[in-house]
Length: 232
Image (cartoon, rainbow, N blue to C red; front, side, top):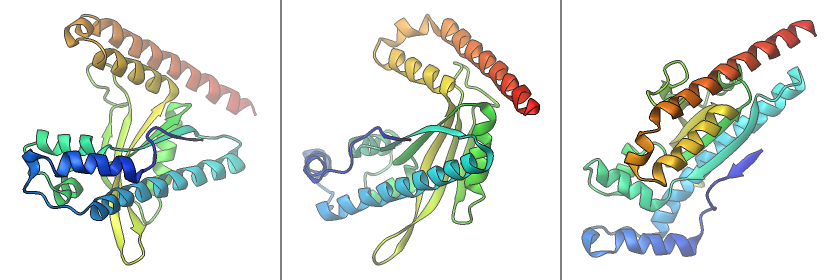
C-alpha cells in the first residue's frame, strides 16, 4: 500500500511557490522559467514513482513465493520547493536548480515500513540487486542507533527516469523502518518540533528508554516469528 504524504504537483500551487522563491527581492538575480521549474520537479516525481513501483513489484513477488509481504506500506513524498531552497541556503550554497540537483539528495523520498527487522535488509538486498539501481549513500541507524534512540536504514539511490527526449539519473532517498521504529520516530518528531526544545530535552532519557523498549519487543517478536516458521 502506498500513502502519498504530499499532494501531487499542482501548477497553481507551484506557480505561487515559484513566484515567492524565484521572483522576490532577495533573489532578483535568478531567472528560472516556470515551465523549467515544473519540469525539474516532475523529474523527481517520476523517480519516486519508479522506485515505489519497483518496491511494490518485489513485495508482490515475495508474497507469491513465500506467502509473506516484507513491506507493510510505503509513504511517498516530494520535498516542497520552499524546503529545497531553505536547505541550499542553510548550507551556504548559491540558490539555483543546478545546486539543488547537485546537493539536495532527498527531493524525492520514500519511507518503507516493514513488519520485522529482517524484512528491512531483505528489501534493501532485493532492490539493490536490480541492475538499474545505483547505491549512492548508505547509513544504518539500526546497527548503530542515534544517541536519542532513532533507528532506521537510510539509502540514497539513483534510478533512471526516461523522458521524451532524454534519460536522467535521479537520486531518491529511501528510509526503511519497522512499524515500531516509525511509531517512535513520528511521535518523537512531533514532540520535538511542536514544543519548545528545552521542554522536550528534559524527557530525552525517557524517549531513549521508549526506543530501547520497543527495540527489545521487536527482537522478541522476530524470534517468535522465526520459531513459528521453523515448525511449518
